[in-house]
Image 1: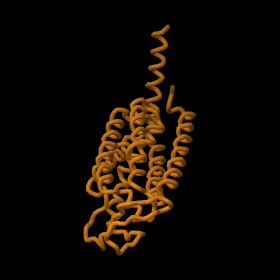
Image 2: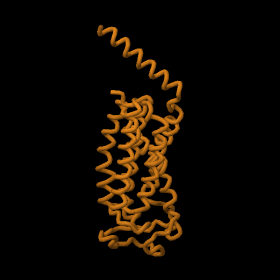
Image 3: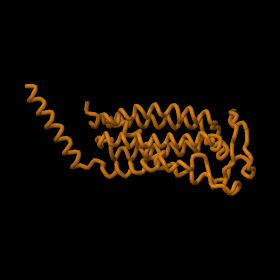
Image 4: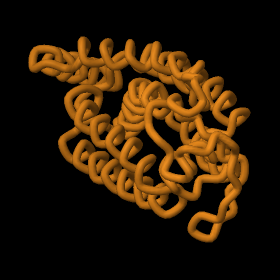
Amino acid sequence: MNWHSPRMQAVNQGIALALIVAFVTTLKINVGLPPTIIVGSSALIGFVCWRRTNLRWAINPLKTSILFLLTTTALHIHMYEEHVHLFGPAMSRLFGIAFPDDRFLQIFVFSLPAIYYVTTIGLLHGIPLAGFIAWFIFIGPGIAEFTHFVFPLIAPALEPGNPAPLTAVINGTTIMGMENHHFAVTGKYYFPGLYTAILPMIPGCYSVWWLMKNRPTASKETAAVVTQFQSTCVGGELRN
């Protein structure tokens, strides 16, 4: 199957857009608007970059897979720090959203990794949709993690002047352990995940640079088509 034919490109783009809508809707319902904006923006930027790169032609599937696995591995290390220091409840206090730690674990630690494993298989086989998911990770955890360095500078939506942890009911969900990480109140420049945020950013940013540098050009695509055509002809002659 030619995964990169015009028809298959259109099909893969349609599926990618449907995934963006489904994921953004799920986050909006289960987490809240601010994280949805961050994640949704990453997905849309990744979609645009994907269309300019490995949607049209697979770019070194093995290296792309390795970079993807390095980024997701670093992301898991980063999420461990987020879990230990209660990233979800900290976001709940910061933005007034219902994001308990168990929901953070269910979505980001247990559910999404299953998609990462399948994505790696897709990247190795040059399936375009896998390239979109990889781009989403490269842009999201790869670049958008810089927001961790901004969060300590934002006053919390809930009791901004109170340095003590809070327990409150938000949208019908009880959120415990909501720390105040506002630098102006605590005097400590920290937010859950800040220390390890740089880890997924390193392979993520490199991946963005490398994929854009090696994106398909007219000459590369023509050469690839010719090579594929020659291989088909040779294979046909051998069979005859």
